[in-house]
Length: 601
Image 1 (cartoon, helix red, strand yellow):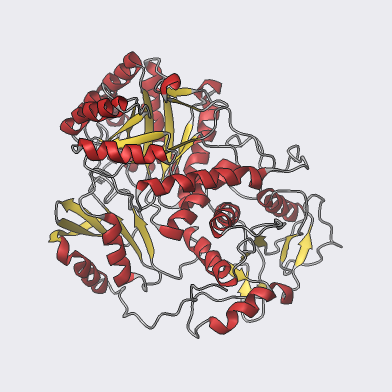
Image 2 (cartoon, one colour):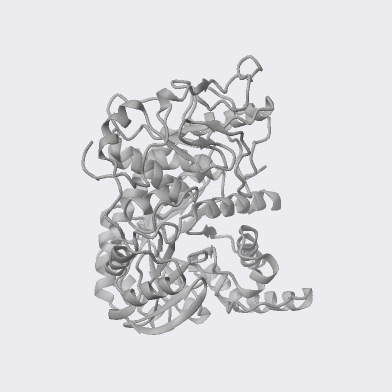
C-alpha cells in the first residue's frame, strides 16, 4: 500500500509545488511544505462584473485564498478580463480560477486572464451521452487521440503564460469511453484524470493538481486513495498535489458532516494540499468550516507513542469498501455486528437526559447504554491473547486515556483482532479523552465526523458512541447523522445539493428549503437538487430522484440518471417532484414529527 506512508503515524504526503499566481502579490503555492490552501467559488452570473467583484472580495475578507468563477461560454470567459482587472485595481490579488466544462474554446479565452483553469475530463472535449457500446482498443485509442488534440492547446498556453491547471474528475461525470471501459468507478475516475495528466507531461507541463470529487464520502475517499496509490506506482516525479472536496455535500449539519468525513479522513492520512467545503449556503460560510476542519487535524493525529513500525497489513481493503466481518453481540433489545446496521450507544448520563423526550415512534433513539453492555475495553498497543479475549461475541472497544489518536487506536484494534483470529464486534468512540473545557458544538461535530466517519469508511465499527458533544440530545442526533452521511444507515431523506455558481438557474438555497419542507419525512429516499445540467444527471450519480435546472425558470425532473419530465415551470416543479415520487411508490404522507427535540439538554 502506498497511498499513505503509515496508517498509525501522521506523515504528510510529499508533493511537488504548484504556484498559482505570483506569491509576492497575493498568489499561493500548493503542495510541498506549504500549509493547506483554502478555496471557494462565487455564485453570481459571470457576466455581472460588479457582483463577481463584490462576491470575490467577500470571500477574500473571510480568508479564502483561491476563488473559482464559472466560465460556461466564450463570452463569460472573456468577461473574466474585466473582473480580474477590477479586482487588481482594488489591490485584490487573490488567484482566480476559471471553471470550464464543455467548451475548450472557453478555456482558451479564460487562460488569457486568470491564474488557473479547472477542467473536468468527463466533459471537456469528450463525449458524455451515457451511450452503451463496446470500444475496441483501436477506437478507444482514436478517441484518446482526439481528446489530446483538443486539450493540448490549453496545456501549451498554460505553460506559455505560467498558468496552473486542475484536472478535476467527478463521480458520475465521466465520458462514455471511460464509463464503458471502466464503469462509474474510482478506477474509472483515476484513469480519466491520468489520461489528461499524460498529455500535460508529454508537453513538459507540470503545474497541475488533481481532484476526485464525489457526493458520497466513501466513494470520494476510495478515489483519492486509489489515485495517490497509482501516482506513487508511476514514479516519484508523479507527486502532484491534491485538491480535496466532497461535491454536492448539501447544507447545514449534513453538509458539514459529509465534508468532514471525506476531507478530514484523508487529511488525517496526510493527503490533501488544498480543500473546499462545498455547501448549499452563501460561499463565505464555507471558509470558516475549512479553517475549523484544518485546525482539528493536529488534534486528531498527534501521538507521543510511535508505532509507525507496526508491519501487519490493514484488516481492510482501503481501495474497495467492504464492511469488516464480525460476530453478533446481544445488546439487550437489539444485536450488533454481523449483518446488523451499525448501532448507536449512549452513556447512562446521556440516556437519563433524553429518554423522556423521545417520541414513541422516533427513529433517533439510543440502542444501548454503555454502562449496561459489559463492553471489554482493550489497549491495542499490545497483542491480544486467548485470556484477554476468550470469545467472539464480546463487544470490544479501545480503552480511554491511552496515548494514541482515536483513528490510529481503532485501526490497530482491528488488526490485533485479526491477528488473534477474533471477529468481535467493535464499538467506535469519537474520543478517548476529554478536554478540560467542553468542545463547542461546531468542533465536536467536526471531530466526531472525522474520527467515526473515517473508521466507518474503512469498514470498521459495529456500534458508535459520541461523547465529545456534551449535549445529550445533540450527541444522539450527531451519531445518527454521521451514520447517514457515511451511508451506514438511512433514518431520514438524503439530499445531494450542489453549491450555487454562475451556471445555476434557480436559487438553490430557497428551492432546497422548499423541497425539504415537502419531502424530509421520506426515510430512505435520496433526492438530488442541481442548479444546472452540468451538475445534473451525471454528478447526482446514485440519487433516486433529481430536480435539475434546465433553462431559466424551467426544471427537468429525473428518475436516477434519466430525465422523465422536461421544462416544468419552476412554480410547479416541487409539487411535480412529489407527484413523481408518488408515481414510483416511494411517497408516504408525513406524520407528526417523531424526531428528538432540538432544544438544549
